[in-house]
Image (tube, rainbow, N blue to C red; front, side, top):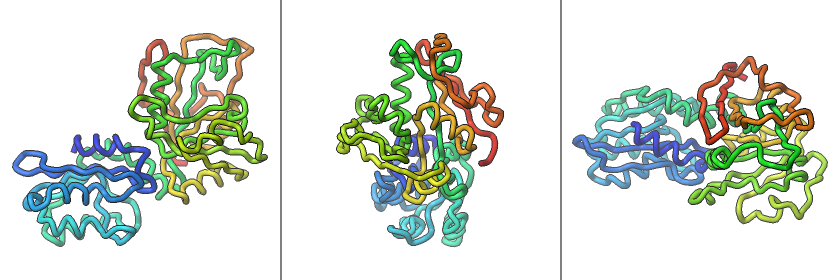
Length: 326
């Protein structure tokens, strides 16, 4: 299952609107095939693994990070292929909360005489499936804020230098590759003219969809994100509220959203209760009064708890998770 989870994790940001799922087929103690949800969500991991195994799947075990689908969508149900293959046992990390599945796939497998073992590496699978589950349960994507500050919580450096060093900036690019879309505001585009792409070697093709909140149509056509559509798709939105924005994104298949905004947009997400996670990069410098601060203080995030702390060169990354259901 650890291998299956690793496969699913590797494909995050590439499978929306479907979840990223990993599947591994084991026979006589050896892995004989594996699969991962394809770009765009189809074909599914189980189908790819079974096709890879062929007739060798008979009497083998299948490890899959999410309950196999049991309903007809744009592809036939995965359980049909599993049953036909002769698989004898299926190990599942977590159930699919989609009302069209939610245990139905497991029951169908059991009725076919296949042994089913649930909740294998359950916690790890929940982390990978956060986006998909959020759309189903909350009708909005899983939302993460990326914030870089000095020790005195300034988000800008008047000297025109980066706040953080190269290791922290590289980690930020990795985050972009793991999210379906990246959201910023028109003010950031006008002020910084960013590309908002992943530029890590080997991951250039994993850039997220770029979404800009521009209620007054102020973004110049000469900006990088408008000119360079061949690198990554850009969507302009002018909805009035963040709730409207996030719900519309969910309806359009976005399951994981990374927010890289300025002071106003970031503070709005913090105050709205929509943020699920914060990646807080802290540089070991003091900027002083001339630096720009968020209106929402990061030191008073009562609903967030630290789940990880990572040293990145001279900088520090705190990963905070919201402990309250929003």
